[in-house]
Length: 296
Image (cartoon, rainbow, N blue to C red; front, side, top):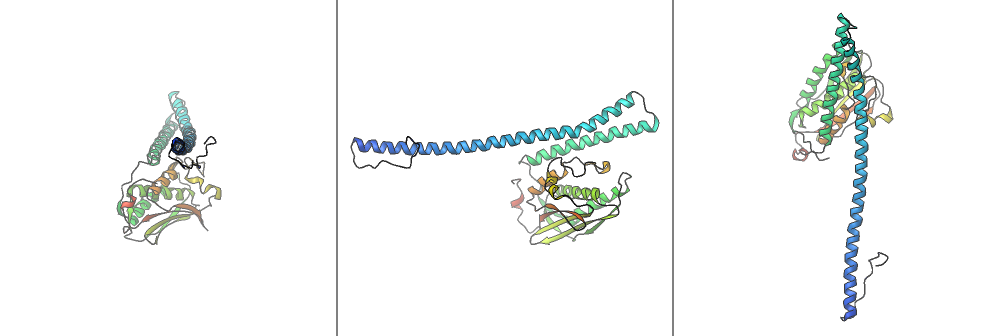
């Protein structure tokens, strides 16, 4: 007992005072062993909590630093161009250009704040998705139709073709609005990185009770060391963002959290012609109750 080894017990041979003392020592040893085991468990949990707290603190610092970096450029641009207008150093069309830059940068800041709020809700662990049945093919085709209008934007430097090979009447389980957000993000990334006159292929594949959506673009491969990092907050492969397509560096982080809430198999990989992003959803025949909560 003095060495904190409570595995040994006194052998009780008599019912006199010595026997009672032996029983008392055994009782004391057992209680000390229980208390020590509980203390060890509490100490291990405390260590884990401290490590988790350190990790959260580091994440907070990194997040604040990243946000500060992202906001620094638009704030500086807005300040500089606003001062130019105030000092009357520009007139006519050039003044209109200054105002357009200010509006554009303000919109970028607004998008960044909105994305940060959405990501915060998704990462809180309490966010619940609105599960229901919907036709995935209709959602995909409507999103494609909306995004194809980007080709007419003067700021888009490359032309592209979206080739859809999507099964019809493909009913799945999921939060349609959130899945539309996922498809929009994957498609805009594909448009951004598709080579000039390149193709974007949108496919659906059925494997057992799951429907897989693949969005592949013709263009450069993603470096192997970046394939996992692209899902991190504020990580950007292309440091120079196309203004017409926006881009806050939070899109894929939001997508990752949405797909986790859907228990989806998702990822990104290089192909022979470029890069491919994919995700899965359960078909309508799957049990819906298992997907209602946001537990990860």
